[in-house]
Length: 464
Ligand code: ADP
Ligand code: GLC
Image (cartoon, rainbow, N blue to C red; front, side):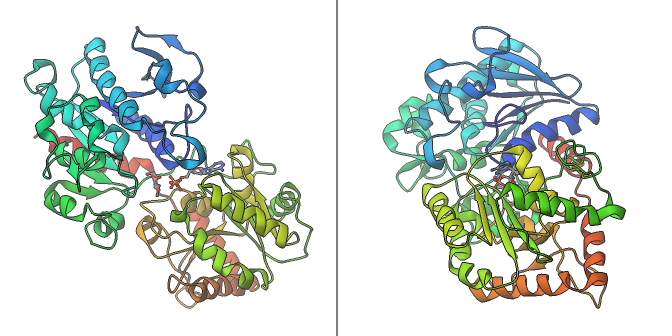
């Protein structure tokens, strides 16, 4: 099959979160399964200059022969941030990503190779299925092309005022409740869901959750209507990158047999975060975007209780101003026990995964989550809320049943969090049980190989 990914972020070119990991890794797996894959993304400032393809796009290669096309436009993409400042979106984002979608479709015709599947990701690409179905309806070039739309995070829907609709370059009549309108505004996530041939999201549990009133962010009805062509496929992890045995960003490397090397990493981590050495108390780590989704309101409420316990915590992340300020405040208040680095830093992220003993992830909701999967591989035990992909990838530890690789919050509350942390630190102090826990965690494999096969089935279902 000839498959084209269209996405707003792709590793190794531009990344703010897991979307980039998925869009830079799944294509490589699909290529390994024998498919022809290319990728289209914007030419942000951080992408740097590449070989020119034509006046519309530059091009680079990943995998064996995956062509990555970067849509050029100085006005829209030559900016300091990918989406906007402080975790927000630039005010002209409808026009900006609308332009990107139109140019991507034109580029496919410039390339001139017939496409079986256009695989779109999140609201930034939600216009593509509309263009395919409407603007290019009679175009023989796209006659056999089908679209798949993957929801990575339903809370971000690309909602814009009605006045922006003409800038999207589609028939005005599409602004109606069944198609692109949502309570009087444009909704580009809804557009992608309604117009694509198949909709997926990034874990089976999240696929169930988003069809309910509590988690559907107003689109539960739209998703229920697509039930027969909506599926949750768990993200995978690229174990070539995330493997403590071969990770070039950590020293020493370690396998499951040598997991005690984590103690050396723990000491290194303390010095990176300027925390004093404490004999044998565990470190809880967090790596991720600093947004409400990741549970910072709960962390704020639980912090006093946490800091009374024999543990230290380190946070690495960037995001919303208020959470950056909150973390800095906590680091000032608890200099012995809480370390904070407000930045995006691959090297330090690897050090946290290797050096922390537990990975704190009390997400309010979590479509899939890659960080807990990475943590597992590094023997860093996840302490997580019981939602979305966390439920699909972590198993609560039970020493009597000799199974489990993490700890779930018993309820989404301060007491639920503290109880999970107490269970975790309780096991930490019992050598044998803790060794079992680490072994279970490091044995987990959530591979792209498995997930890619499900995507192929989805692509085939679209074309049949
Ligand atoms: P989300 O997509 O919701 O941000 P995921 O768990 O799916 O969460 O993916 C987050 C990805 O981004 C992981 O690869 C994680 O290591 C990386 N990441 C997030 N914040 C940082 C940071 N500050 N520095 C380095 N890597 C980060
Ligand atoms: C989103 C979600 C995260 C998921 C990632 C990749 O950013 O928040 O849970 O892992 O997309 O699909």
